Image (tube, rainbow over all chains, first blue to last red; front, side, top):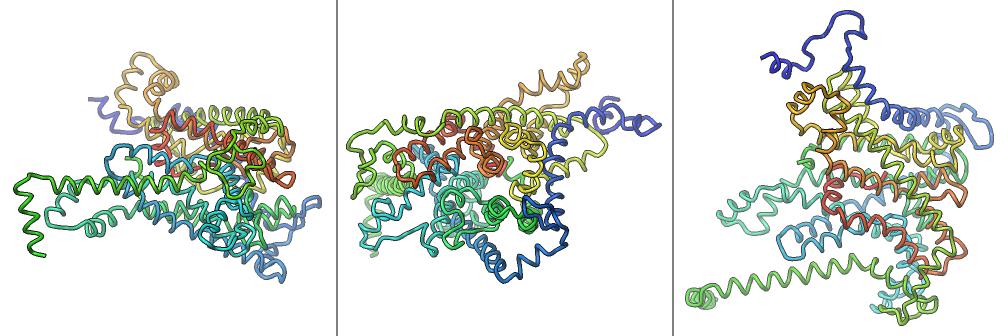
Length: 314
Length: 296
């Protein structure tokens, strides 16, 4: 009897007295278990996050000493005659790059619907679609750099020649560079979305479909009235996580275009890096980091607020 | 129109289920054609990488390009090691990824145990603290973290590549989830037999949760092996670079024309993770589906 009560009651008997005695041995032990993680989080996550806000209030051009300037970095970014156009462009580019997310969603849903059936060899196809996701983005970017080679022996240009379309300069063309990056991003991100969609599709009970089929529903209405609404949380999850990841995109930009040509692929994340490690303007870079941080927090909050993560655990 | 339907139902009645079966076969054939075509399109960059990596310098620039190399130029793979210190990059990446995997797994297991099996003051607050770290990404803390590394004088040293990644909230949540599935009775029985908390964790809980630990380990390894931004920032000397950074400088250096060698290098860099993936496909995919992360 007493064991049962103990099990239902999380803290059966709290001894009275000073706080360390009240907290008891278990609390003390628990914090011992948490300390390794906590130390790392405080030193390399929380402290830098706050420090980032502090640095953003200083003019700090690297070899020189930091000077407190209040919000001048922010006003400078948004209003300076030379600076503002580049920064605004980087914001626009960040959203432009995020256009890959809905495209990716659409294509991977189509493929997931195709792969969601028991056929011989379906596992091989799933692996094929998943391979780009696990390959390092650096290696992938190097391969696509070669595919997008502006000469006639670049594979995409060879295909264009076969189709009778003139050669393109791809990544070196300010208009085409971003679509190229989006195309590569869609290709490499699809595998992950397909896995999530397949998990979502398989969690829909078969009896819904069977009942609807008995009522004479066709394939399109099955999708419209069963699959689509029940995939709602999955779709929302993929959209938010995808947007978060696209705001953070850095590797492919650094390997393939370095933000060029003419800042056509310079996103906030890349501009932050450029300011910090090429122009050595730590204050300005931190101001960009704070703005990016706010955008990421809003997105993450939306995701936590509206997506039931348990959907993917089960 | 009517007669067609009549005729069809007529044959159906007489010859059993030939027509629906034929329809099914046609459907299946169409399915295979579409899926194979799509898979080929998706694999095209990989195929092209492998093909190019086997071509000699003149054939790389030949037009029209060949799909099967006229002469298999295996030397490209040797050139990779000869032209840049890729052996050193491999060593660096392996040391860093292994150290991070072991360290991160240890800290995650400890924290997960506290959250899953213990009652303590401030548990909910601590949980929120852990949760909030998932919102703060490398990009946001890049500048201050770099400044911290400079004060510690860790730039171009292994600790800079390892220490910041020794904790991971996602890992804690995943392992905690798995710890919670083990019945409490087991712990009580162990306690009655005089088994302490730590010994229970190491000798009973961990062996029972092997699959999730394996996938978390792989996940940590892969994330670290493929990471780019942070190693780029904290390494300057060539001999401290990891594979990804080494590859980037290898390709962008000297005007960049040896595409055969570059493709061989890209393949070598991505091979270890692909190799591991084929061994543990299932738990790999599951862990990815549940954490929602691709890299650190």
